[in-house]
Amino acid sequence: MSIEIKPPLKHIQSENVSILPSMDRVSPVLFDEKKLKHSSPLSEYEKSGYVIAHFVEKFIETDAGPIPVVKRDLTLRDRVETLGARSGLTRNNYRIAPGLYAIGKPDQNSEVLVTANFKLTFDILRSSINSISAWILVLDSFGVNVWCAAGKGTFSTQELVNRINKSGLERILNHRRVILPQLSATGVKARDVKKMCGFTVIFGPIRASDIALFLQNRKKANADMRQVTFTFKERLILTPIELNIAFKPLIITTLAIFIISGISHKIFSLENSLNRGLTALIFLLIGVLSGALITPTFLPFIPFREFAAKGALSGFILAFCVLVLFSVKSNITYFSTSSSLSLLLFSTAVSSWFAMNFTGATPFTSPSGVEKEMRRFIPFQASAAILSLILWLYSGF
Amino acid sequence: MRDIRYLDDVATLIFDKEACVGCSLCTVVCPHGVFELIDGKAKIVDLDGCMECGACVNNCPVNALKVTPGVG
Image 1 (tube, each protein chain N blue to C red):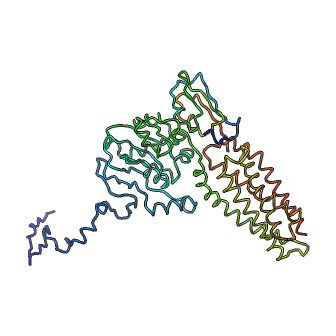
Image 2 (image 1 turned 180 degrees about the vertical axis):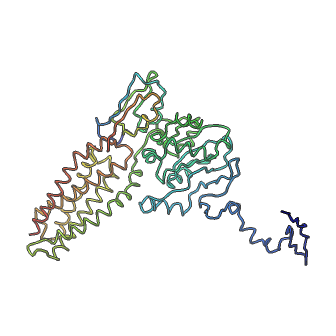
Image 3 (image 1 turned 180 degrees about the horizontal axis):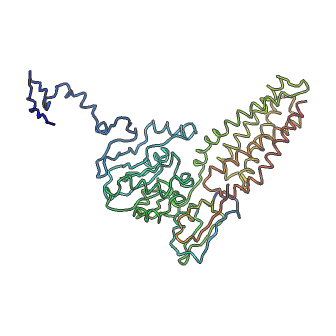
């Protein structure tokens, strides 16, 4: 077998344009000033099949490769997306790519803040750590917040260790420590992380907004930083999800209401169905609003410890007030004793049920307590609902 | 969180004082201030504040803590 050695190609030149082999004279069009302005530093990091996230402002080169630097300020887009997640519309798929990010100008001595890949969590972190420069290691929590993911076992020791190893952090850092949100302690065993990858876990404060002070205090958290709160604002912000959850059963119940309300001595009366159905629907909505919005929001101001009891009370009072208003303002004839009683029971049961549902969203209800509460109150709720149905049917004749 | 309380006498948290080595990690990870370190040992100071999240159990180096929350 003979190898044919070709002589090197000659530099072919014609009219000042160099064609081969080195193309050392590039067409002047490429140096168009407009095009140069468009070539931002970000474009160098574009890859086919990938999109550079909108919250990335640039990349920094490290010994572990290029790392995206994220913005501190939330844009309009972030805020609109937050609304989507808070309302429940986009909550289940609101995630960012896990891995290593940077904020500010971190170096080999900077701290590593570990967080979840729920975009809402990530946004809160990057927008509330003041002017700190740090590395941000995002774990794959399947788009769930730190606490819930730790409880479910996705924000775990194993995931942290894998992510530390994969990120190349040890090539960047002079030290071997990571700062975790305190609430991840349910899923992360600090001493196992040390054993498995040599990194020391420091449990930081619960809230990202305390990180700056925590670092200033030589990584010591005070008692306030270590305790969860459940303020008015924190409760209110959860209610859209509660209402969203209520939506589907609400539609089904509404259909049932209009059918049941039409049952009369004429077998089925359309007039009854519409008139009485509308009334019952109003008291269903009262129950839902009371249980999923009012009770959660005013939680500590409503008597009783059990959420079901709080909800029942608030639903009863609200329905009672509306009944009184109705009877004062109008002379609707079907507001008999039995129908009034039925509507009262209905709102009370619905409100109690949705309030009890809210135990799953708070940061202080123990599973043992919730179980005890459910055992005690579900029979009451069911009896109230059945009694309400019987009275409603009776009052239709 | 002493302003909003849930049910009393339901928390299943059990603490073995003999086993405790006083590392204080439970006082760090508990989100409800249930523990305090007194005389080199942890002490449960607010059992009814416990929400059975399991953070202390998960991080106790000597298995001195136990919680059995059930299904919730």
